[in-house]
Image (cartoon, rainbow, N blue to C red; front, top):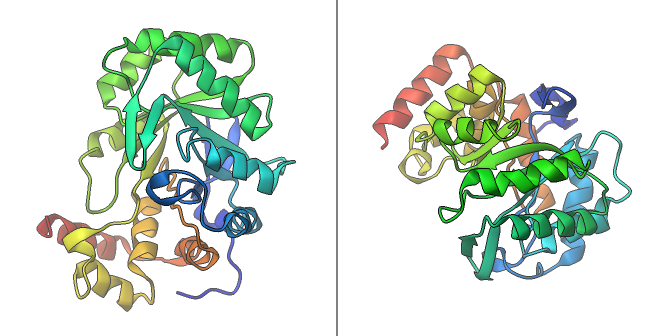
Length: 292
């Protein structure tokens, strides 16, 4: 789908934590690293070009993590965009260690999480992280211990808001007893709605829901499949239709499609112009159920 003037503002706005207004369609900075989210990208200059284009297109919410690279994504964001535009909100995560390409293990010990925050501050060249998210709850460490140190860092002014990743409703409520939680980042898309109850919880309590892996895949998105057919009907791509559905599905939804290509980035942002009727969306959702 082509559009003359691309701008993320057309996705609408959301108030993160009640005081950070962002455009709902953001950017996930995981793919600007090497293969397996490990090491440097093949072309660091292209990665920086993508990041600069992100901001030009009106995206003011970028999601990253210290584990992306590790360290690489945060560093590239600073190299490409610092000093940052006033309205740019950068979210990062901590709590996953890396043992190699595509390998991730949670560590939720307080001293490790404190190190994660301090090093993210340094790499991003900021005095305060807008949104810091616990990448995973460590089953070996009580979440109260993990978030206790985060609460202290928040009191010190080093973290503005706190979010969680890959959690259920009970875990959100458990964390809320330690400190305010403003967002949840779970795997979610039109074809994978296992976290639907968490979306409903986030919508009810006005928590930002950040779906990772936002583009539908598998049977639903196959060539000639229901999503492919609907996309062609609306002169869009499957990815654009997937992102448009997320924006339609809940007012707290904050999709963060990631890419290392400027062209692909522009196609993603163009999803804000994909408009379907309520009946058409309902038909697509029914098709998605049948494709499982």
